[in-house]
Length: 336
Image (tube, rainbow, N blue to C red; front, side, top):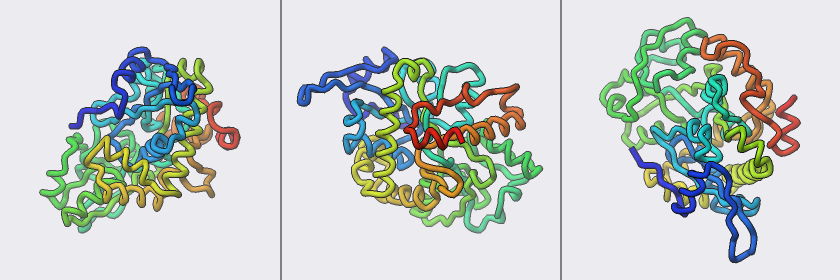
């Protein structure tokens, strides 16, 4: 397990984290004042965070008056808990996890989308007889315990899946052609191809269980610092547009500095998959767009989780998300 590393300015970051709020820093060369904030990711530095790294590399955050540092995640990163406790200002997580956190009373607030669709996949050996989710009936799948998509798929297809707790290793898959595990569209297929192990994948979002990967912050922080939140989203949106449609090199170089295992070839593969499957920007014909979260889709996710028994009682979308910090054009789409 990697130890999460502060990308730069460790001493100043420690002060920002302990204070749990935005800090302002004078910039000697320009006489400007930048607001320091930390973005906590929920996994190691990979293309799924490319837009943020691109915005950092190309100075888009600084142009918005922000001094942003990215804290790399991994097992045990606990982004929800860190934001709820005011230890970091921004973080990313699945919207279903954030819905459950809000229902439990944690002061977390979704303010934008990181990814329109979850890149989680079921990884199979190429010769596996499993062709669709219904074929997982009675089979063992290595996933994180409590993964909500398992409950959804079991109910939708009237099947039962045997859960093997995730151990973040690939030894079982390599040793057993019948082994099935959860992975990421942008990572495991590439890793196994380098080992000459042919694979196929089922994108979990295609099952119908399709949460956002969401950008969120502390509810009190957002209320006290609305312009900071808006500026962060504007710079992130600009970074994602540039990362996906331009040269991803600047962001990728920073990603590799944080996580050496994100090699240039792996980054190139992940970048292509994000674009091919429209994981980040979604499908415009369905009203999806970069950074956009909508009231309708979140309400549908809440209803699904309530039907699965994962959320008890009524939960208003306003307890989970705010669309007030999105750029005006996205804000209008969010409320439609």
